[in-house]
Length: 148
Image (cartoon, rainbow, N blue to C red; front, side, top):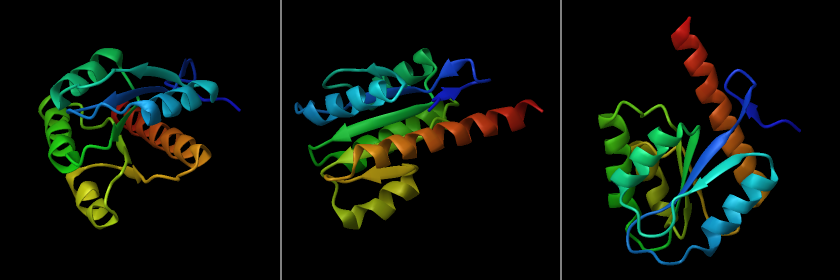
C-alpha cells in the first residue's frame, strides 16, 4: 500500500511531538515506529517541547500532519497554544491530532480549538494510521485546489 503525498513523489510526513513537562514518551515512540513501518516519514521532536517549538518544527520540516502525545493533563492549554501559533504563522492548514489520557468530556472542546482527531488509550495503531493518512490526503487536495 502506497503512503505517497505531495504530487505522489513524497511520502506522508508526520511530526510526532511531546509538549510540556510530560516525560512519558513510550506511546509517542510506539506511534512513531508504527507510522515508519507503514511507510510514513516521521520526525520525532523529543521531550519537553513548547507548542511554539512544535509549530516551528512542523513548518521547517514541511510536515503533512502533527501528532501530539500528552499524558500530563495540560492538553487544553498546550493544544490551544499550538493551534494559535500555527494560525499566527499561517500554517493552520497542517492537521493536528492528539493522543493520550484525554478525558472524553473534553474531546468536543479540543475539536473546537482545532484538533482534528483525538485518540484515547486503546485506539488501534491501524485506526491511527488510517486517520493520519486521510488527513494528509485531505490536506494535499486542499493545497491542489488553492493552486488552481
